Length: 546
Image 1 (tube, rainbow, N blue to C red):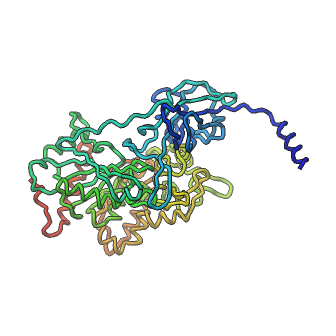
Image 2: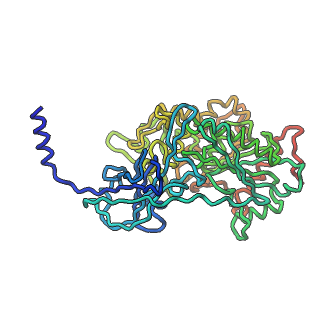
Image 3: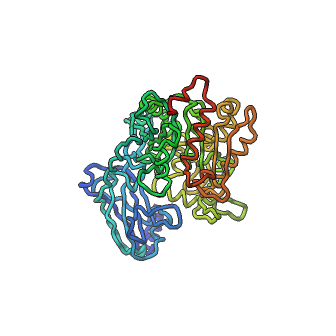
């Protein structure tokens, strides 16, 4: 025992003193008298405008960020960011070159949820902003300061979160054409253990007020969270497609249908992916059993499956396809543009079922980083490791509010800690194939249709229409090709749908149509034509035609 103590003392005395730069971030009692949970973000920027908190992205143009979790952080107590704190894109404070920078800190505040599954979790609730820590009402932040940073200096920099993000402004008022509504979802409120609302913004057809006996088809436009209609519908005169859409709609040159966008942000992302999820709750059922029936009853929808269609791009494209697959009788057509990953054998640039690592293509003596984002000409802009570390710095346990964490939150089972099971390790990239198998059985849309084609096929034939650029920015075309390969093998029945692969087109390709016409003007008549051709005998195909 004595020898051990002597060796330890001599070893410690021999270590040189090392200078260390660190940040201490706190909030005054004027900002909050109560202790707070959340994620403290530190942004370091080479430019002042916009504020550093708005300059963090996963591409090469990003500024620097660090993040640290806090629980029960009391007023005046400090969250510490030092050389051991993980950052993006540089790993550590010690990797930041000495120089002058603009610095800002933010506290993304978490709340405690007592879930119906028995777990207690701490998550950032949406506050009407669409789930963004930079702009979430009530979040605390510091004023931007210009500081000289030097990792070799023995200095402590103290930042005070004296500012608070204001509430979102009120939504635009209703008009003759555009209506806003919210309903309490009993299904979601039970899951989350607190009141949860679903919102919708509606575009009503020409003549809706003047024809009270008319009932209308409903078309759901899926997209990311938007406080308004989110379709570029604009009454402001101009040459853009939004004003042309407004002119065509209000002049009666469009089919007389109700178009609906959905507001369904969760604590994990700006929307729910419109599915039932072990971690986020039964959003698929809430939308189809609560929200849409309410809309159709209130605004005179026909209220039958033959008279509904769904469309959207990117996240909305995946949601459109998933809605049609999971609720095959509820919708009569899915128009799917540049969808998120529809086949996890091509999860961007990896095969979740066979590959060992999400970040590297590995051989016996070398490894190559997997890309995550590219230009249409093939130039790589970001890697899978970079994209994931960008998310990890913003939040642990799927709480970053970013894309890959959102997929994990919605597609994974619940872990022992109550948070989503990681499908791969965010630091090493090692894939958990057991979790991937859960994804396959519940959310791999190609696998589900292939597995269940005997029962799904008769309900989906003629309803699926998919567009994607074959140079999709996030490599999403790889999964669509696998879906197409399967669809071409279908029999009893043959799928009778369409695929459009835009040559050298990046993300958000939505088909080869005249841009002067506009996407909505191009596809809405096609949807209605399909409804009319497949309407059952005795269906109302006339009251909405005047």
